[in-house]
Image (cartoon, rainbow, N blue to C red; front, side, top):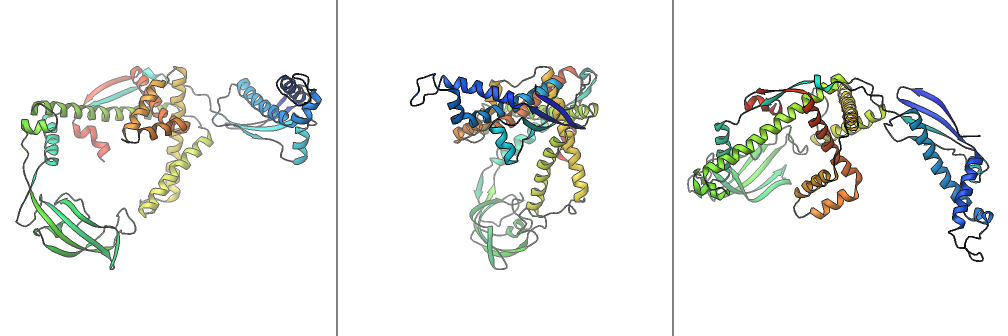
Length: 448
């Protein structure tokens, strides 16, 4: 009797099958394995190739049957998927007999192999005509004022400071040592030695820098400052702290002329060359922002044009990942859903919809890539790993080994590369027109 496959359940994208493989088929495959083993195994008292199969069965029969069962289940499952043309959303769930008597009968070859396989499939995806997609690419020219603004920021970061005997004021750099306490007790991060601070930059909590204005080198002062209610460290949020501060130095800032000497300190022959490099850098920033917006608009259209039921298990996995991050963030900030102007129920519904969109778009992008033979090459993946190593100087080998030993991490690195290649492919096919905008318009949504 051949293997029997019976569909026992079908609901949405989930299927369940009952599979029965006769014991005679399993026994035949076990004998094949033992016959092959006979020519390779060496046992005391027997010449090579002359060990009786019955003796081998006593020694290795159960192990051979376990291997046969494993191979048979994998082959049967693959046949079910192939015969129905399914594309699996997740790994199949196989339910084998668990009763001791059933397992013993199966391993000893007395019982048929009967098990259940539960699968979840990806629905057939009908792709839109990508040539009908209309997109606008925002283009912002780099204005001279933008270059000058960046140049000024660089100059400010490199400006010299000169010691002064007068009182500290906004723009001056003060070097301080301080000890903070709350209710008379020191707290983590509340002390420092020889810390430079430019007044007016808002580096410290509100009110702290104001207390330093008017002090001179050598002055000491004790004052109270309240941490903001929404301070990141919840243990300090809303609490009043006392700081004992000593001013070690007061320095006035000097100007940095945009001349040849300044340009050369940054590695350029002249201010003109420096400005040219800054313009190119800003241009790349504009292009990156424009592409990001173009990609978002493209994904919105893909989402709108491909409405289908995504596999529930994939959606739940994505939702659980997102929701875990949301809860961790709220916990670290000491905030609640009410503080965010919502409820947990409403937030769950919102993020579940986001998870559905992500899964659906992921499946659409994968389908586009598969049908158009879009792949990430080994060279491109290697280049991405190399780029990751550059982010951690001195730990290059450690980063390289991490990706080499963790297929999941490598897959996570491959995913955005693949997505970008599909996006590039679609942009080439879509009807894309350029729209001239200002820098403010280009970055508007990001800044908001």
